[in-house]
Length: 431
Image (cartoon, rainbow, N blue to C red):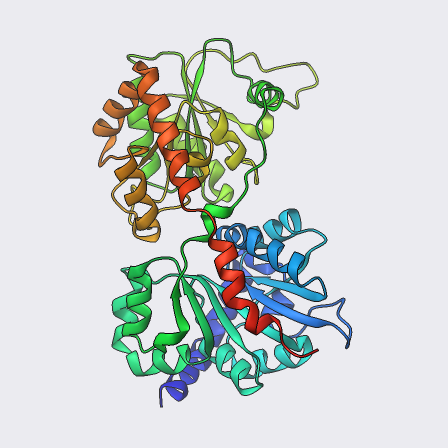
C-alpha cells in the first residue's frame, strides 16, 4: 500500500517537479539524465560497475577516501558516482578524476530508475549518508543488486517523520545488505525504523579521513597574497554561510573591530549563486566588499585595499584551503536551523572552531570539539564577538584550541578502513 501511495504522489507532483527543474538554473544541467531520457555514457558490457550515490558536494567529499580505497583494493571496478547537484558533479570531476565517472541521479519514478539500472547494470550499489529513494532501492533489490549504506545518519528533524511511516521504512531499509552509520545514535534510529540488527554497524564518520591539500609556508604566503591581505592584517573565516546568520556574523565583525581594527572577515556562502545578495547585505552594514574572484587577477597589480573589509568567497573549491589562513573560524549552517556543515575542515588545520546552536547534522563532531576544548558554541552575535576577541587577544588560547581540534581529527581516523572491510563481501562478488 505504501509503495502505491508513494507512486501516486510522485505521479501527481510530476508536473511541479519538472517545472522546478526547468526553472532552477542549477538543475538544468543533466536534465535529460534526471528525467531518464539520456543515460550515462562510456560504459561497455564488460564493465563491473560499482554505483555510488552522493547527493551533493559534502557527501562526495566525505566519500572521496572510501572511493579511493575501494579503487586501490578493487581496481577492476568501474566506479560511477551519481549526484543531484552540480556542485556534487564538480567535486567528483575535481577530486576523483581518473577514478570515477559522474552521472546525475534519475528521479525516483519507477520506469525511470528501472531503465537507468538496466542500462548501467551495476554489480553493487552504495548510497552515502541518507538518500533513501524507495523505487530505486526496490528495483535494485528486485534485480539482485546488493546495496550498502555508508556514513549513514538520520537527523533529529527527519527521524520522527520516518517513524510515522515505520512499516514503509522497514521495507525500504530491507534492501540494504549492510548499513554503516556515523554514530551510536544513528544506529539506534535505524534499528528503531526496522533495519535488520546484524546489518547495522557503527563505524564512525568518514569525514575524519578526508585529506586536505597540504599547506606549507610557500602556499600560505601565496594564498595570503591572492587574498591581498596587508602586513599586520589577520583573517576570520566564516564558511558555508546562509542568509540571516550572515547578519549575525557581520554584527559580530562590527563589534570585534573595536578591539581589532586590522581584522578582515571572509564570508564563504554555502551557495555562491547568492553572492550578489550577500554583497548587498554587507554593504547595508557599511562595509567595503571585495570578491575573491576579483583578487589576484588584476593585470595592474593588487587592488591595494586597506582597512576593514569583507571578502566574499565566490569561487568553488577554495574554502578548505582558506581555513588554513584564518586566526579564528566559524562554521555556517549552525546559526540558523540548517543543522551545520563541516566542522572538521578548520579543525584539520589546527584552528579554533566556533559554531552556533544548530548542530544536528554534525552533533557528534560538535560534542567532541566541545569536550576537547577545540571548539566553542556561541548563541548570538554578542557572545560570538566576545569569544572571538578572547581568542585574538590570547595567542596561547588560540594555539591550545587549534591543537585540541586537530587531536580530535587524529583520534577518530580509520573509519574508511573499517568500512572497506565490512563492504568487502559485497565488493568481492563473483566475476
